[in-house]
Length: 306
Image 1 (cartoon, rainbow, N blue to C red):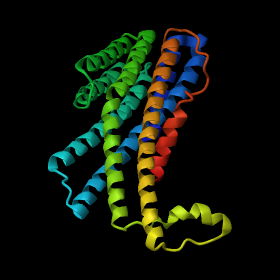
Image 2 (image 1 turned 120 degrees about the horizontal axis):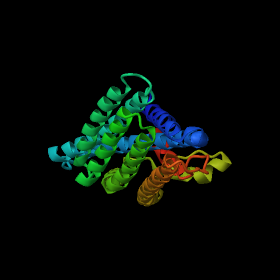
Image 3 (image 1 turned 180 degrees about the vertical axis):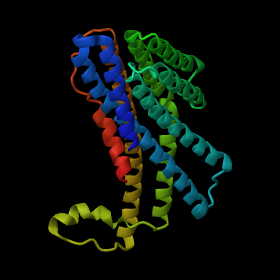
């Protein structure tokens, strides 16, 4: 099963089980809607991290090309730092996957072993929350997230469904806060990638290693004309146009990433508010996922298709 589907399954199962149990018939429609909306939000979050993973992989390849073609340094420390960041992304994927297992255990509250199963899953998640410190999470944030898990275990053991739903609400708030806390770390990785890619592309243009004739297609295609290999002054002029295009598109890459990050942050915050309403047995008026998810999906889809 694709990891994005596992994440989506986690949210749908978690919210449908916990919030339905907490709110009863009065909030069942809201709980179902919240589960569906959070499923879409979780898929976008999974795609966001997958996009970052692509950026890291491309950064390593560009660094290796720079080293091989131009003898630019790609130190062991730099490579290790990228590998560490890759590991941190995988930790977040594992966190979401194991949270899916917790949701499945939580769905079996009527079973005699349910409390023990939830306790085991929550214990594993606590360890993963602890490992997040190597990126940006402060000890205070980690403690808050672990406390929410501990409260969940206690509530489930005592069959207090509403308290369990509130603990899930607290953990959802923690995830949203964690995303915002780590945003500068991921932004720095995007900036490094864009700078390296732009510099390498510029070097290749300078060496005449690129075919810049494609820049003429916009004028020739409407008339069915074929682009020929440019020579002389035209070749030099196109090289300069190509370098201008690199600079423009590098800025566009960074801007698109910033918009996707902002959209993901707003989506998580919005869903946290909606879950909070349901957990407090208050009506939730929204019946569609946050509209800001479209920016996240557009960015992630473009990266995955490159």
